[in-house]
Image 1 (tube, one colour):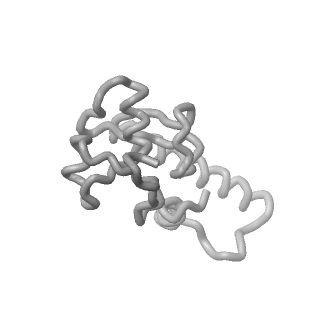
Image 2 (image 1 turned 90 degrees about the vertical axis):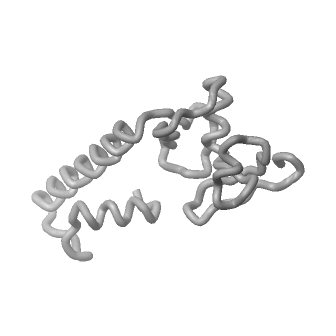
Length: 122
């Protein structure tokens, strides 16, 4: 419970908490509600997050807001991190297909992997 209200999920699968006095709450689409992982990161850092700072979930689980699972980084570093993950998955797929042949589901492209990643498929 935050300020007398239960947490809820936003359409992207992240936990929202009710913090009407937080500066981000006034700018959010859901007035008074903010992303819990950002609030936790701010408390850990003892400061507000700067514009352009991203809070990354290390294990990829959007609702796992334990402090040890959160890492604050720049947008650029966050994009690179996910780009590197996609590159590594493509490398492993190519290695698999060399050993065992193509997957029956059809070709996997970088674009398809990005789409799957946004849907939470690891």
